[in-house]
Length: 94
Image (cartoon, rainbow, N blue to C red):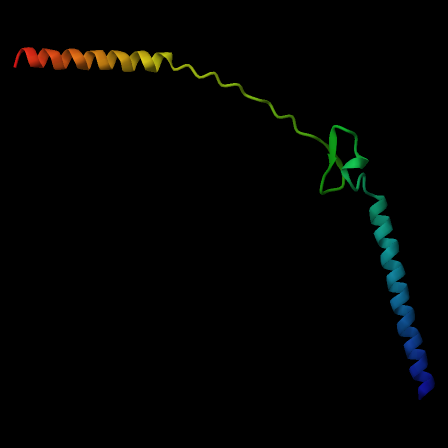
């Protein structure tokens, strides 16, 4: 009875060892198929993506917005002057 128990333990240990070795071999095969693992593996103008491939950095275009408040200021000034004339006109004719 104890001889069968020993052989069973040996077989279980061998299964665990071969499973571990197989997992390590499989992990190395998967890693070998990658183009990059970290950003340092890519050229200077690229980064390592989550798909383990090098991708170029996106170019961001800066938009320059020139704000010109001259026209709204003129309209507001004319409205104030017109309101002043209306108020003066009402005071004179009242």
